[in-house]
Length: 461
Image (cartoon, rainbow, N blue to C red; front, side):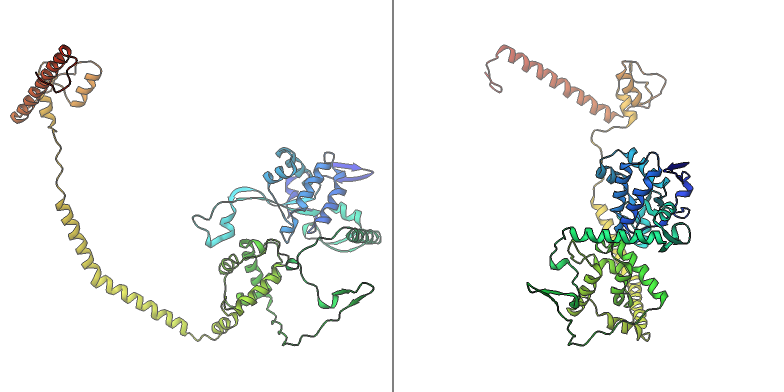
């Protein structure tokens, strides 16, 4: 789709395959102000884009600082609450930004559990569920680079800004002066000294009321710390990868620079700490909610905890690991052999006696429990034989007898019965006589109550 404005033509990117991070023609952006400037310029090329598109781009720009690559997690529900728009409106304007080349897909949202991939081996039952979010990468379309006079090396998302044309240099100088003017006129935010990164002593100004003097920096009287030896490229890359895993688990390290955090954690990493151990230790630290410089705080806190013996000495641990001659491994084998011999003695000597004792106790307990014998339960044949011969004598089963009684029907005939047990017949005859005696007593008592209603129960003549 082609759009034109003021004599300029622009091809809208309508193919979804060309809106991915690997196929887009736009250049990567990491700064929110550059992304907003590109959005304000490119919105004119889309016939349906407008102020709402700029609002959505501003919401994306406010989240760019959370990733060192500038990537933005697109939480649709949070964006709906933030902008007060409908879901369909936000999805439409996100599509306009993709068609303008201002954002590209890094990852499509799905129901897949992101915690399983993030935690890898430590993932298990109870780790929770978090769906995979849609992630966008803000980018600068080639049309905006041409308008700004940017000189770009490479193509696509990996292209880099290497300079300016003459016209572009004038624009960049004017923009820098405008930003400096706004910074001088805008009120500065006041923070407490505990959350502000201190300046160097050479730049500290003393206000005497009339003139300003610069206090010279003082030389340190104590012994200076020797700089750490440079690591090989492969070890540095491994340390940064381990640090990124730690940053995903510790909230106050999430937005910090991975290289600075890796440099601060180098003593612990060299001592053999894993990412799981580092995350477990750093998660227990109490940090201010408005921490400004996480790397500086991390270096200070590590040094303080080592001095107060709240952390193992990293230098001694590293020295022990480097000077180990195999004695630790031999000690581990000896401990394991002792544990194995103890278990073998248990299997050969103790376990059979325990099993025999448990079996005898179970047998004694089973013998003490009396056998349950149901009261007033009779065999099925005796039950059928006790019924009147002219009605239920030939019924097949008690279940059919009960069903016939419920439906007021006569059961089927044709079953031959064995002779009734005389003991059961005698017991049933006694029960019938007792029932008739109770009925007669109840009738006589009712008659007496009717003749003498004022007599209390239990009174006699």
